[in-house]
Image (cartoon, rainbow, N blue to C red; front, side):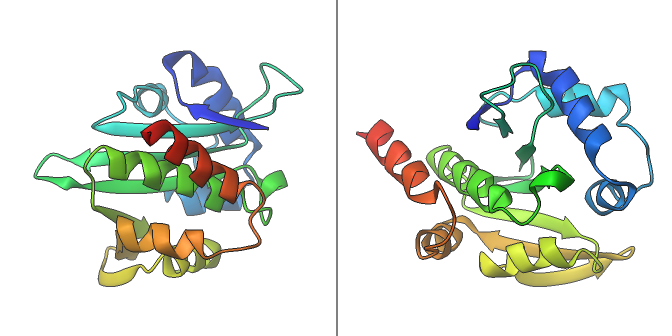
Length: 183
């Protein structure tokens, strides 16, 4: 497996990855029972510019052209340029393997480099794994609106929390790679 930035040519990979989510996982991630993402949603998800929309994906290195295994996004808030809306999705076959944490670490490091200090997160209360991930990153509840929990994550605090996690395969390598790239 390898992790890289999401590119426009990844649209089919994302479409196929979303199709591999169970109906329950799609509902928890997209707050709807849609069977597939509408074209305009897919187009938005692959238009990452590395500043206002930062996105990373995990892909299988042994099977080129296969669906994305997981993807993380941060969409910068136009009204608060230090805040971004955070989302993560991992195909069901990779749940419980630490992939969401690994991708989140990459996203947090990149977002910090781009001047972001906070994530806003919208999670359905029944999405216990997403709530557990957010809480492990230091998320604070800031509200509840239309059946959705609203949380905030301080990026610096989340990075401290992730650095302290010993059991996520590849996490130390992610931190080392970003440190080496920073000079």
